[in-house]
Length: 297
Image (cartoon, rainbow, N blue to C red):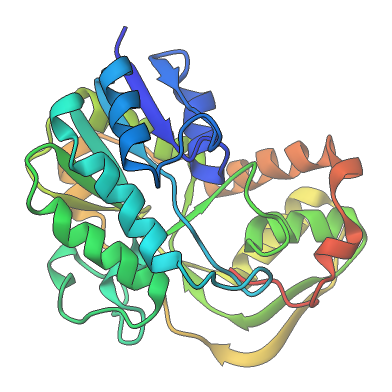
């Protein structure tokens, strides 16, 4: 059985991948205390002792309106990536989970294509850290970059991630709040696991792929779907009129690799996620949901 090392196993992406891929592969998902990715010697020793066939690098330092951006975000993200990449002789290959933020969000076109990369350099620390790592991927024959856009599913931070936030607010009898409507390209995390499995099993011909559905959907339409599957008729509040800048990707390159591929139905995915939260409503904090009353995407 193929051995996978998943970094960031306690986070949203890593935790889901570890759970969803454990039936197909032998999964190693060490906690931060078990493997400090910022410690070069610890990373080298872990790789030498475990010899994973594939590394799935999902660990990242993020920032959002609730927690803010740590001053060392850029350093941490680059250092974690480099501590793995510089030891590529100790694993078969690495799948790096990048971000659409690598393209630079200031002038991002709708349905952005892979060739747009390096048109500009991101100005925010998170996007810049992802940009640097993406540039380094190009120098390796063993690393592929899967650029993620809007991934949703269980274990995500329901206080700030829109679809989970909407589900939890409805469960707690609160209105769904949208700061400003925007078109996003959302991918269910189960689809991400299936796509990741393809890249584990195959050798891709390109260095980077947009991993997205390839079709945008407005937050207001997603709110309507949450309301529909809940059966509770919640109030939906849009604070500012108009549409913000679209965040979507062209996934033609991805589909040329993994085709034929059928994405999961968005309504069914939201219904499944809503039911997951419904069985755990006691663990959803009303105070956390209302920390600023303006959920983000």
